[in-house]
Amino acid sequence: MSHAEIIGDLANEPIMEAGPNGPIASFTVITKEQEPGGAGGGLKKSSQYHRIAVFGRELAGFAKSNLRAGSAVHLEGNIRYYRVGGQSDRIAFEIHVGGPQAMLRPYRHQGRRVYLNRAELTGELSAGPAIRQGPNGPIVFFPVATTEPWDKGSLLQEETPCYPVAVFEPQLAKYASAHLKKGSLVRVWGAIHHQKYQTQIQVSGPQDALLINSRWRVLPGSVAV
Image (cartoon, rainbow, N blue to C red; front, side, top):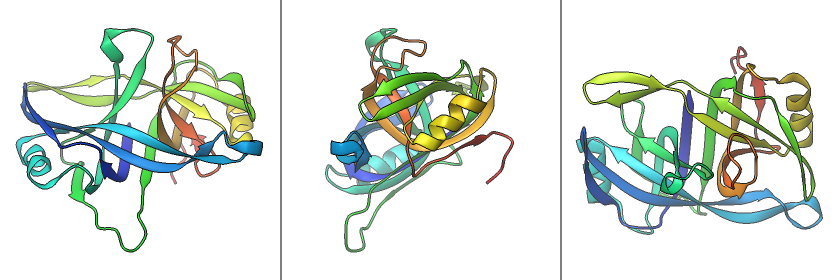
């Protein structure tokens, strides 16, 4: 299972196109946050650009009619990945908004601007954790394979995408390297970060990853929280 919740600003007007099962509205949402890599091991400011695809006549039509470049939006959907340009060495994430669990609405800031970039994965490790030395200490990478429903025309099928996870927080990284292995069932919470990580998991090039620092968690998949 994958799930993402985003509060951010539209970078462009929604673009409508015809899909096999109805209209699709596509746009990019910007979130602003802090991430590891600052001076002295601290945090630095960053902007993440999330590719969004909205499915269905009602939701896609709402996006086209009500959302404009610069407007704030609150959405929930599933994480998907695609290979950029069909290449095998570049994985990117996008968020699909559609179906009964999806949510899309304008967001009204109360005072200061609010941004949210939150994602959750539940699945099995398709490979054991790998440790890489980062500029501010070790980083643990591992891939999580999830089972996702996918609407293929008149049939509901399943697919098993695999998402790279990057753990920066020292105690969580220690836990992951000591207790997780190939086949482990886990639940992870983190933030989607784009075009950054040389994870060397399945592919060799830079790719998007679910970043986990001190704000987030890694738990055995059997633990409900």
